[in-house]
Amino acid sequence: MADASFDVVSKVDRQEVDNALNQAGKEIAQRYDFKNVGASIAWSGETVLMVANSADRVLAILDVFETKLIRRGVSLKALEVGDREPKVSGKEYRLVASLKEGLSSENAKKVTKLIRDEGLKSVKTQITGDEVHVSSKSRDDLQAVIALLRTAELKFAIQFTNYR
Image 1 (cartoon, rainbow, N blue to C red):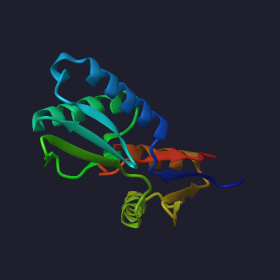
Image 2 (cartoon, one colour; image 1 turned 180 degrees about the horizontal axis):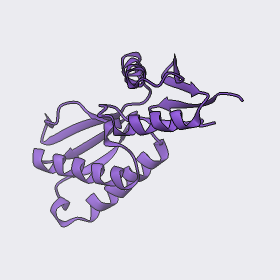
Image 3 (cartoon, rainbow, N blue to C red; image 1 turned 180 degrees about the vertical axis):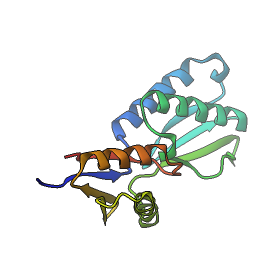
């Protein structure tokens, strides 16, 4: 029997993020507390730019955006907001957020160490680029690894792909 396997990746569905951004933009345009304050949220290259006339309103825009991301099934661990202190630019406050994609080699090593420390002898891990390939003869062991990784307190978003 061939080995069963899956990949541990950290990817963001760009379309879902775009949909969440558009929904947040619509809500900001319609909400009474954002009227006539120059509040907006939009893509700025590969980052998300939030603008308003006060620091509190920019943080409220971030909160609306995070709520929309959660509803669309995007992990907030994939959203990286530098410091949550809006920067002053003229008369407006700006906050920039970016999306983290791909497992860094450091995070991939954390995942493999977590799997190794679990003590499942038949499970093999291999780091390939920005993903971790996990294989085993037993599908039950792979299910145990998935359950372990889902309950682990990781500081980055993970998904499981190519389950065979």
